[in-house]
Amino acid sequence: MTGVLLGFAIVLVLVGVGFVAAWLLPGEAHAMQRGIAPLVYYITNPALMFLLMSDADLGAVLRTYTPIALITAAATGLLYALVAGGLLRRPAGPVAAGAMASSYVNAGNIGVPIALYAVGTAAPVVSVLIAQLLVVAPVYLSVFAWCRHRAARAGRFAAAGDAADVGGDADRSLGATLARSLANPVTVATGLGLLAAAFSVDLPAVLGQPVEMLGHASVPLLLLLFGMSLRGQRPLGRDARAEVVLGTVLKSLVMPVLAWVVGRFLFGLDGVDLLGVVLMAALPTAQNVFLFAGHFRLATTSVRDVTLLSMLLALPVSLLVTLLLG
Image (tube, rainbow, N blue to C red; front, side, top):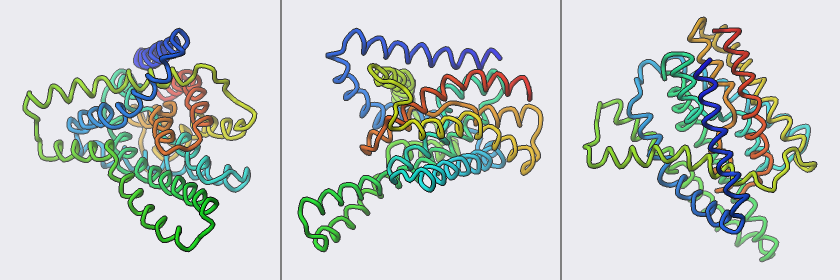
């Protein structure tokens, strides 16, 4: 129980600092956000992922926890896509961003203290990070790249009025964009960290300590960035209310239930192992989704709202899970 409370308290304090900073310094807030976002995306977040992966016990996490994380995330994202795209008739870009927001958990900062204090091992959180960073994130980033490419091509069609010429160039651009999305800094750093873990490679101190310093800066910077984005915003705006409610319900309620079903009946887990699986699924949406959606210039309003609301619901849901399964 202590780990659950500590993890959420840290996150809420840092988000609050970002919000207050944007409120007290409205003129500088926009410049700070523009500077922090690429810094986190290209430097500090990859450093953090390398650190976490290089210390992982691969045998312990790949056998059970990682497949459960993949199945749960895929099922939750698919449910969102079916409802938002099929029933609500939303465009591809918002559907992709909403699906990721409903299924991509904040394992990097909240998950670590919860796993260590409530479960007693970092294996559940490392397995979620492996699943998300090596499989889930590249898939969504490829879809984001395709959505951005399609929107840009439609704009060029409208401007040029020549579909044949634009189409050939657009196809080449799509291939390059997909390659860049698959080779994004976080995925590359995760792969390098796993290679370091597999071959027991330790960086020399002159490299290891700077990487550690950069990695430790990632979480507070990302939470500050998210807090700044909340200033002047009202959750559950009329335009995206249905998507926000759908994404929040799936993330906060449906995903933990799916994790329990998969862990209990497909993999035969019980006790503290099952608790770890369900607690990881009950974590709120990762702020990385907001960062990724903004990087590909997709609509971020519903992503931001789902992230905020799932964060508020995650504490009572996690406490309930701990009482029922702990």
